[in-house]
Amino acid sequence: MYNVIEEVIDYLRKVPPFQFLDEETLKTITKDVSMEFYPKGTTIVYQGGPLGEHIRVIKKGGAKVSLGFSEADEVIIDYRGDGDLIGYLALFDSGASRANVVAVEDTICYLLKLDIIAELIKTNPAVREFFHKSFLSKFLDKAYKEIHRKSLPYSVGGNIFFTTPIEELATKKVITASPDISIQEAANIMSQRKISALILSNSNNTPVGIVTDRDLRDKVVAKGRSLSDPIKDIMSPPIIRADAKEYGFEALLKMIKHNVHHLLVIKDGSLKGILTNHDLMLFQGTSPVALVKDIENQQSIEGLVPLSKRVDNIVGLLLKEGVRSGDIGRVISEINDRLIRKILEIAEQKFGDSPVSYCWIVFGSEGRKEQTFKTDQDNAIIYEDPVSDADNETIKEYFAEFTVFVREALLRCGFPPCPADYMASNPRWCQPLKAWKRNFSNWILVPTSEAILNSIIFLDFRPVYGDFNLSELLRDYVIYLLREQKVFLGHVANMAIKNMPPLGFLKTFVVEKSGEHKDQLDLKTKGIAPIVDIARLFALEKRIRETSTLERIEALRDKHQIIKEHGDELEHAFEFIMLLRIQNQFEQIKERRQPNNFINPDRLSNLERRTIKEAFQVVSNVQDLIIERYKAMIW
Image (cartoon, rainbow, N blue to C red; front, side):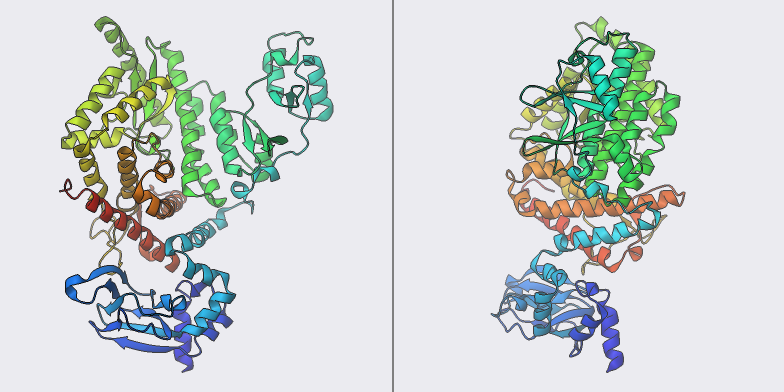
């Protein structure tokens, strides 16, 4: 009997929620364990029958869960495999069973006493969480922690910067002064107080501006300005603010986005502190803001190349700090945006001002702010409609050289060209606004296969540099075109169900059968892409402007019924699969291998395998709802 108990304990150590229990508790819950064998076709639990006195843990085999009292009206709602539980609803409902559970292959189960598990739920928060929440949300945080623990050997410190409220990071005592004092007086205050920034406030003690050491250097000393001039003449409004409850990564994003090194920290409407880039670097040892500053200071492509190589290190830093994958994408996208803008500024210095107003747009993962490590270039140009054909020729000549220079500069900075040539250097994707409107009209109103492909690619566009109004005008036009376009949406729905998650009959993984990635899972094509496609489809249905997958889900929560019901699950699934992908690629880079989107499921922990299976199942369930919603149009 001792050996049997030890065997059961050894198995449960790998099965949630029991894997979170200590050795003594495992011995307690298994003291009266038994084991049963169910031949294929055996009904383990009958719908309407008694729930029983045990919870079953499948050791080996599989079972289907269904509703209905005959094969004719059977509705299959789930499959259970190794490590899954049967009968846990009896913990909360003493009535009859709500479903049939039938062995679909020879199955062995461990039987644990219901009353022992019920007592465990009362005393153990982790177990209680397991049984009271959906599996995906329940295990997501634990699985995140498990993934991040894998990064700890490479961490240089135990800081949790990205999950720390900024009120804990900010300097509490803020020195303020009137904007009417002189530059000399302001400089004296900063020198005496040994501060790098002085907040200027009006008579109501409301901040109206900020002066930094850099302002004194660049606007006073370098310009030979009189020290008796009012300090308000050189202050920098508006001041970027952050709420005290925001986390470190949110402050970081604001600094990067607005290219500032100081943030005012506001709590309950009042000024409570100031956060500087120096504070961030002291706290975490280094800062992505410093990288952005270095990018801004460069005046040549040669100077940008070594800086671009530091982005991969930033990803590693974010992983070590426990940042969620969606936030990693946002931070890296902001850094890459800054790099792209600097390249475009250098190009304008080289070729002179553009003969016409233009907007540089990006799409793909760039457009969705879901970049991590370097990806292919996906960009285009929208420029102002030319007055005449002659003007158009002049514009084309300018951009012909300009865009090739930018393409090659991006290549040198680690962004390979798009194999399908979806780049601004291709004249087809460097067009006036009217041509872009014509493109989208043709794609949406006459949805051929090529049109659908192009529309799916370009519908995720967002502006990065130049005249953003051109991008907004195009977005307005696309939203206008989408009204009542059911045929087009039917084609997009087809794309959303094309890539099915890699789950087999009994929630087994469907891996690559041959080739370089044999026995591996394609996390991008089979995991991330379907969620991206689902969010895009629903955003187009409701004419949502956001392009990021997570931002689309958030914007749809009160607008789309499927997202109302499954938005949290989709968000969790996206975050988890994306995190696995980033972690896997980071490991590949550290091993000096080319990063890819494939992962061997055998290298995942039991918890990770179960969590990703549930994530895939969420995607599959929503795809089924799309099929039902568009059944008249999907083929």
